[in-house]
Amino acid sequence: MGNLIVPGQGVLFMKVGTHARESLEDIIERKTREIEESSFALWGYGGSTCHPQTMVQPFARDYHRQGGRIYLVMEPMESKHFAEPVRADELSVDGIKWEPIPKPINVKGSRYALVIQNLRKEEFDLPLDRTEVALGNSMGAPGGKYINGRVDKACLRILDEHHGPDRRVHIGLVADIVEPFAVYVRNKID
Image (cartoon, rainbow, N blue to C red; front, side):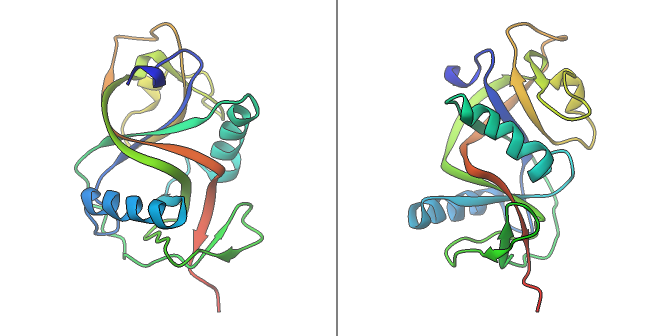
């Protein structure tokens, strides 16, 4: 996919696989249906490297203000995420004001979610050593060094030159990240 690998483009890279006891194929099928029914889906995730308010929202907002967009690029992998497949009931952009998640939308076993449209299978190699971390404490770090060990997601900017030995990851799934870009999700507090 050549048009995503251009200098200056922002991508949110994420490794994906089984999540909350659901296979990646089943998740793709469900999310595609959710987008058809509701015009968007929530792609759930956890961890602190792509926090909704401090990382994803400012990253995506900056590109959006410039007339661009951020793409979610996903590397399929084998995983064993055994969290309970409990559906989140509420979402929040700021962690303060909460609202119900629309009935057709299901986010399971996650603390956060990306707001996506246009989920599609696409096959291409992402040259991690032609990326850099776009913001946060590791801003400017080469993507190929940052995505390592337990770090499985990052807000990255495509560069025009390599930062290393040309490490590539195979992308199999892409989506458009749309406003409000990322949200908190939770089970309703009674």
